[in-house]
Image (cartoon, rainbow, N blue to C red; front, side):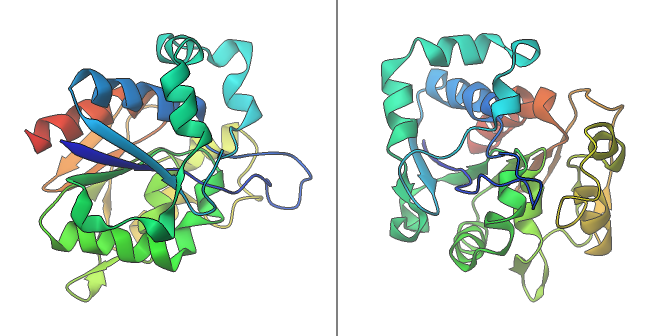
Amino acid sequence: MKILMVLTSHDQLGNTGKLTGFWLEEFAAPYYVFKDAGAEITVASPKGGQPPIDPKSDEADNQTEAMARFKNDRAAQEALANTVKLRDVRADDYDTVFYPGGHGPMWDLADDPTSIALIEAVYNAGKPVAAVCHAPAVLHRVTYEGQPIVKGKRVTGFTNSEEEAVHLTNIVPFLVEDELKRLGGRYEKAGDWESFVIVDGRLITGQNPASSTAVAQELVRVLR
């Protein structure tokens, strides 16, 4: 089982002067679900090297078991510090691609032609694609058979009310919930901050950071 994890390289939160990046739990939790399932994991990002961790995701209130495990795991830290450049990745080499969220992907990966082509190649080859929280934003220009990949599919992602709660509604390039609906996705959600995952065929999406373990578990189940 070969899994590609794609992280953002973007660290600026719009023009607020604040830092963003990927959400640490959304990398750490899935990473260990995959690792413990015996998967071979490759981590990539548009610029390669160490991707930016959203400083908020590492605050005291947001600590999780997976994050604690990551902080004691030299090999995992090494993998994160040395992500391969996205343009050097070949879809054929992997069984699936997984996108952790955080706000960063909304600025770089959502419109990255290399990322879009990668997702299309993986999906066209009959393999599953998974994304959690803000990462379903990476699907917004992805097409399948000439239509948006999410059209007619059950999907979830960070909710408008969750975005409102973190006061970034007017900062993000678009709202994940609104965009998935605009593209014809059959958007569903649970209560804010609850774990919620949808599997529709080969498309797997999770609502928020609390959903990251469950998304990864569903992906492993689909792969098996």
